[in-house]
Length: 625
Image (cartoon, rainbow, N blue to C red; front, side, top):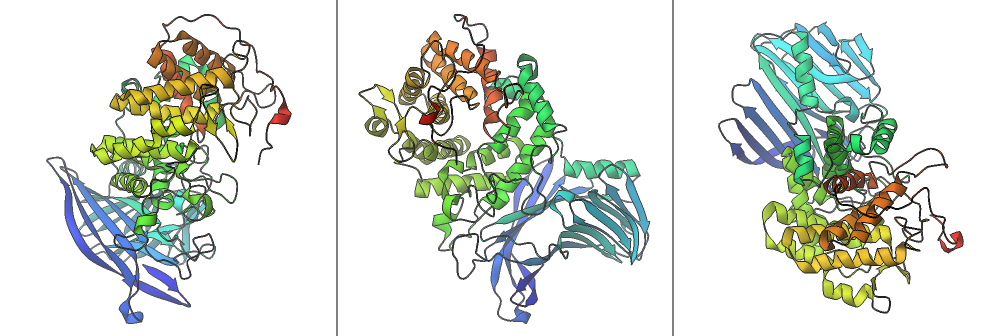
């Protein structure tokens, strides 16, 4: 590893400070080493730059190792403005290097993303993916092959045997390289180019690289090497989709969603095509951008709003593992780049460690909206850990929960968004650990006494959501988001106070956001920034299903069904059907489908929904910004 400091490129020294066995059993074992990164003292006084964690896993009976290395940037710029103007660390080279004893030349093979194999030979051979759209293989100065996407593996033989190194998401995180030179095999985690001379993580960022190593006495056949490369890029996940859907382990989902609501399934298929990284929105590549995409440039989405959860819901409800792969990419980005990692003992640890940066101008810039608690992602990282066992997602999810416990951002706020996500993050931490501190912390975001004093309008007998300055309204969409988490609090604790809050919100939305009740059945004023037909119907449909579940009041279930009927009539231009996107509130669609499936045998009075309800007076709505 080398870094640019002032006008010089300086080598970096790694110091292992701890090695431990993190798991040991009859099937698998994992060893983890961690330590510090500092500038080489032979180039002047050593300067601490960051930390690293290296993991090595082995399985019984397999000549293979799974490795990962995670780098943390501890370099705080001076001056530190807490903004996008802060200077990042400049990493000019980052690689893992291994030895092939006795190798003096011979066969070297690489994989293309289309499954083809590139056969080469020589003492020194390199594959360099210089951009997300171009790679070249060279032997000395001769270009052997080039193309768009490499699969991300190299295999080379020596007298001691053959080694294949295979990468998770290779070309998507370019520039990278794979090479052999005599006895040395190099996995270039970052391989500088003229267009990208340095990898520039910001203060508190991390980055993990996952490499699979396979060993054999001779070079395997091409089909085996291609399969091993794919195994590293898309590890098998033995999910039983219907079981997950019906168990409620993630949410109550409908495993027959595509059959039961074909309009939405058809729209998803049309909108997301092959469900590749590019199709789902990750059209931005590289070591920092992959797994994210812009919100309103220059802002990045980061944890907005439930990107990881939405892809999981679609993957399970549709039985499509491609959506699960997209969720894992988003989770890896959120854990590494959007979560702030401050080393223990540092003065900034209490203020920043574990925070998810929201809508950052450069992902992890910490200023402005970055501190908005509405976009904490600890709950979704915990979900990723539950689904995959990813240790970094677990660590960062708990760091996020601890950040919330320390600072309690949003407690005392009159807006629901500031408390909804923190409450859910702390609830998930409690589920994962059983530690009562997290449940108590979650409860502070739904204090019934505080709500009675500040969020109940007793003259109207309704729960109101104060949005913006001096604006107190029934915000159907905002309140439904909040009520969904409060409902989960009730279901997991049995505390009736939470059930009462959910019903109070549902009563308020029914009474004042759905006017007049019968002719506007299922239609809502979301909040004054948007008109009433803004595609947020499923949120209210789920709210009313939950209220029906708690009360048995059929008017709620009838309104929920009407809301869904109106949602299915949504259009972009009066003719083209369009619904919520997967990266926004589209995560709710399979949830309502789950409720609808559970309650399909409950009869309600018929209703007449044939179209949208006109806004009563468009002049009453604030202009969109």
